Image (cartoon, rainbow, N blue to C red):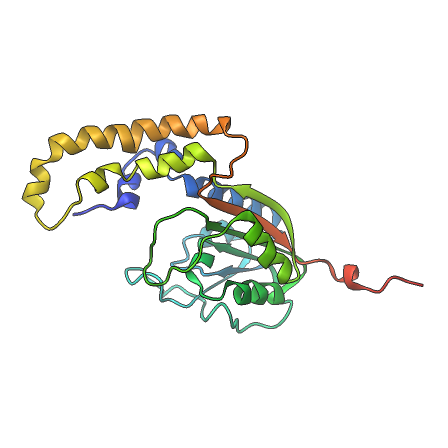
Length: 253
């Protein structure tokens, strides 16, 4: 059995893997924040829900998972609540109390339309929790179109009539290095089709794996607090809000 990066991380203790899978560190933090802020019974849209891997965070809510089901051919999309294009959501205006959208916007070819649609279906005062990469390898090809800066995020959100409440980087320079070092053994010794040849190289591969996939990334995780600017980040986690209805009311004369 061949294990990709996610499979290799799954074999490690959680306290180790969560520090190596650095983009999920901030995604999990954002999920926990959404879970804590949304009251029981609130209706939440998971835009680009994939296999529904975040559904369990919202068991106290009325969760609706929506996806076009084209991104990853190996995924099981049978658990979707609705299969739809995110740029043409089949829901009424103001019909959700909140929306989440994690690592999806790089895979849509019209991100402004998608964010506009999410803004449309959010009720006034509703919150939008989203994240997307800024520095990442191509994945789910050919459905991979964009990368985002915090300013690009802000522009798209404000264009959709919402406002940014909080913007957080996925770590800084050291987390960026950590992620790229973790691919060292795969880049130096690509697996290929000959399993025997790969096994013969294991005495060379394992020390590189130990240093660049485990030890050095763990050190870099803790060193990342030294980077105060964090412009050299892997991506962004954001909380946006649709303005309450009374903010659009005319000011009395």
